[in-house]
Amino acid sequence: MHHSVLFELFLILTAAIIAVPIAHKLRANSIIGFLIGGFFIGPFGFGLISEREDISTVAELGVVFLLFMIGLELSRDRLRVIGGRFAGLGVLQILVSMAALLGLLVVMEFPLPTALVIAGALALSSTAIILKQLSDDKQLNTRFGRAALAILLLQDVAVGPFLIMVQAAGDAGTETSPWMSILLGFGSVALLLLVGRYVLPRLFRYIASLKNPELFAIGTLFVVLAASTLTEVSGLSMALGAFIAGVMLAETEFRHQIEADISPFRGVFLSLFFMSVGMSVDADVVYNEFGTIVMWLVLLLVIKTAVLFVLARAIRFETGLAIRVAMSLAAGGEFAFVMFALAAQNGAVPLDMAAMLIPVVAISMALTPTLISLGHKIEEKLHPKEEDQLGKIAEESEGIHQHVLVIGSGRVGRVLARLLKTRNIPFLVLDSDAQQVSRGRAEGLPVYFADGSRPETFRAAHTDEAKIAVVAMGNPHATEKTVALLRQHYPHLKIFARAQDITHIGPLSRHGADAAIPEVLETGLRLSDHVLAACDVPQEDIDAEIAKFRRADMLLMNELAPRPQRKPSGSESSDKPAKEKS
Image 1 (cartoon, helix red, strand yellow):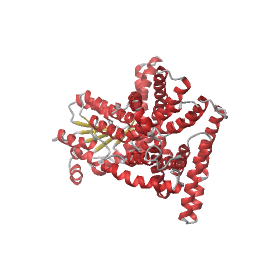
Image 2 (image 1 turned 120 degrees about the vertical axis):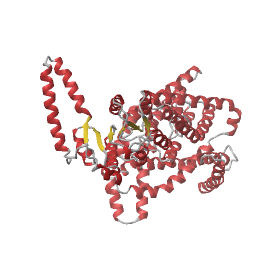
Image 3 (image 1 turned 60 degrees about the vertical axis):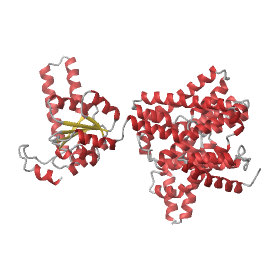
Image 4 (image 1 turned 180 degrees about the vertical axis):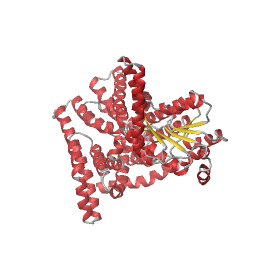
């Protein structure tokens, strides 16, 4: 039954209004409601919509607007935090998952071109579902969120080469040279970056100066669609162009207004996208090939979960986080539908095989919210939340006083903790890295899992009774924040901090540190000792030179961090009022 696009949109919205509340009553994710609603009104359900091409074209905009909104939440500075380690995880996830799936398909005697296409399509995950879930749960800027985002972004970049691979694997081949396609892709990204850096801010300042809200919204839509069209024409995904445009606009002062204008479009188009995915599931194929579909579904989830878990552990993720990342990204993704459709058209994948794999991917996508939630629960079970630990810290350290509070149990904090233990000086160590906590605990040190930069953590660690606080964190910004909070809430404390280098001493002193020690100084002096000795310099001369260097360096540090003279430690009268005040 063929209807106008407008009537088809009416049917889709009607199905959504019915299916989503039912999904909520069953405590299922709204995405599952959209998928089921799409199936029932689609060509393989009640047949209310027989042709889904028109809807699919509009629905693709859902992923485009989602990626644009994600880009708005990630400025270039935040994006750099993803780092090479997470980017490496993304590249390896694609390559190793594809290699594992390819090996299985070759063993099952699939032709190599067909196996390559299927392995590439199944190696991808659902950008739309995972990033929507992360955004809704405010997880994008967590360690888990950065890892997931890096993998998904690199998968989006891989879509272009994968589509070229599909064309090359089919009978139709490709009219465009692969090298030309790669050059076009890089060129379009470079052009977007240049336009985003120099043109977009000026454009939006001009539009804002006209004080026309409608024109501002139109300008935003124009930027999203123009960026998406450019990357699509260049052989990359539309979503990648939208993401780059979002990142560029995240640097401007108009970010929040743009987000408010785009948010309604994102919700509507994403709903259409998930409904269109539900329409693609053929009930007859699911019924006739049910056993095969279940087998492929299990193989897909097991292989990708195993690959991601091993890779996450290889870059030193704790077990719980590695399981969470692996389970969240194990399912298939929306770009698999595009690849299978193209592969079926040009003969790269047989039609019956593509028809069977589409429900495999769709069902795995429907399971994605459940897998994300289950992975989170497993992580919490293996590594309890910080709030659950605060009571434990307060209880186990009850009665402690005049102790040393060490914040950070990395290489510096753990050395200090071992020395304090040998002298029987009471101390507590706090760290927000579960792996470091486990390592410290294994050495018999009182290390607790907690964020050492929060007032409630300080209260649990009886900081009002502490004598000294040592901030030995590796992150310079977090170190400054922690020093400032300690000085604000506990003015009686002596605060010593680990400085990144000599230029970091000034900021730490201004935030309230009594002393800031550059981590590179003593390492450099000890290394110099060994090098000079190997050069046959007499030891007494080495000791004299190092002592002279240390004196000069201390003078420089005092100039960078002038502090008022403190009264002798025996004078307790000056400390008591401050302590009582705190």
